[in-house]
Image 1 (cartoon, rainbow, N blue to C red):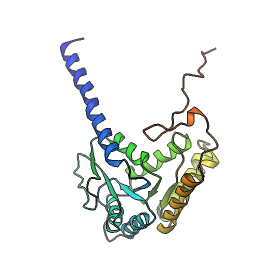
Image 2: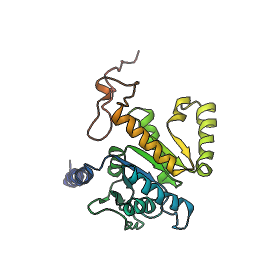
Image 3: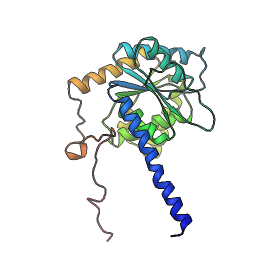
Image 4: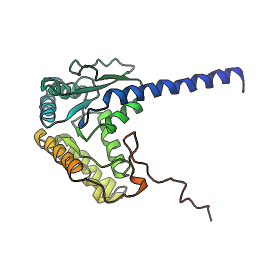
Length: 254
């Protein structure tokens, strides 16, 4: 190995400490905020948009129902949900991300609960680990990313299933029709029960009610998933499940 390669490797190794520091800060800052709900949606939604106003109401209702509110900390829907939680005197958490295009942290984040991240993957862990559910308003690629990531984690049982509620039939129904007609029926890439992993509503009060009902079931009635038991179901500190060792049942090729 050349000196140049050695120096490059050294820099990459030290980069791990920067990543680790983001995990540590996130875990320490967010410990004790549960139960919480992560709210997603477009950063481009203006304050006079009906979806913005609905997200403000959603934040208020979540706090009244006993939840902390987690968002990506930016403008638009994120700002609206934080604003609702902040004005209701609840815990309003913003997980801000450093981007090449400047994103300003919205002013409705509770003291000590406005965190900055360089790495999307660390930030994603925080959204899932501390959430009792997701409420997802209309948005762009980032919003779709969070929706489909939650579907993947729940479908594969990598996390304990939690409620995912999409707000706005006009926005979501076209995507859902495509998922059913193409992914499910034509290509058979998902199972019929996968279409039951999420809910769609136009009513933010209903969305919050679903969160509350599922939280009550998980904390008061057990809420264990009957499909997975034993050591594989054990939770990890990252908010996922241990799972089964992929090499344990591997067989050599015939």
